[in-house]
Length: 195
Length: 195
Image (tube, rainbow over all chains, first blue to last red; front, side, top):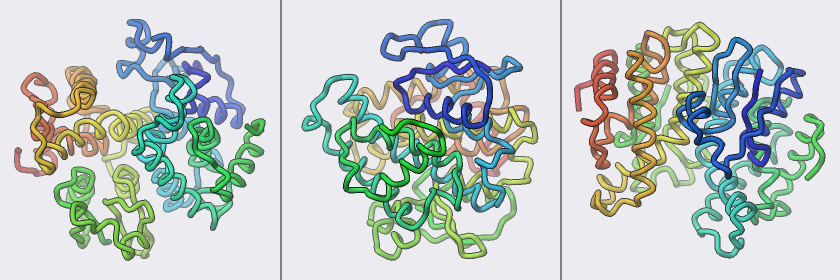
């Protein structure tokens, strides 16, 4: 399997962490978004949407969208709950992540860290919605060790990616103690160094 | 089953169309976003994220996120392909819809139709990315009758919702003939009147 990914992208790192956790073998093909490497004719032939991560499966077929890749690769593993309702809640968190979390928490981090924008100059809507997303997570994690059920799932991997980097976008995680505890728990499960 | 939904929202209508197609019985609880009905304490107790659609399943448990609901309700039906790769492609389209289509095509339509903004005053980035999304779909649908495989799937239901309303946001669909043909095909499958 080949993973086309940019190492600065949480969406790409999700796939690496999952693959490492599952013991899958893969070649990582570093693909620099900022250098336009997702917009070359060769890359667009692989993924017309021009986005990483992109996975080329062992049979040569392509798959994109980080959370779709997570769900596909984790099939049959304990990272997808057996219970139908728990599985639906995993999907709920993963769609919510792409719609209500990533566009604020990850975009703020990208603007601050990679475009050099001062935190104080971030668009107020971005900051407000990022905090709204973190508040939803904090409320859930006050009551539960993981996002769904009692064990690590692909939902935790999807959500931890940009949440653990939120500080780089100016979000002070010290006001979200349940999130901080959960981040350490998920990092420990995945064997990641604490950031 | 209860479906809390706003009838002007494509995300909510997806759930209605799927339920009708599958012959599920449900009560539709009209929930007006513009009147703040997703922000009341009662609603937030059901869904802390304050979003519709929200489904209360027959056992009383709640589920949100339109595409997670589609995938949950359609389990075991022909609307989710049996082949693992096809299933992954369905997920890919559905995550792509929420990240790369809905935030442009649906938001433009909302601003024009419900906030009264003239099409000419839409943010250029919104229009540009909306057309980029429609171009990705057009390219795929030139080669295929449905988004994944040879039959209707939940991916078509997820994508048709705002695509068939794109004209209301100023997107001229006549330049996307494959999309137009596909919309008619999906409408016919779902028994929807042509818009």
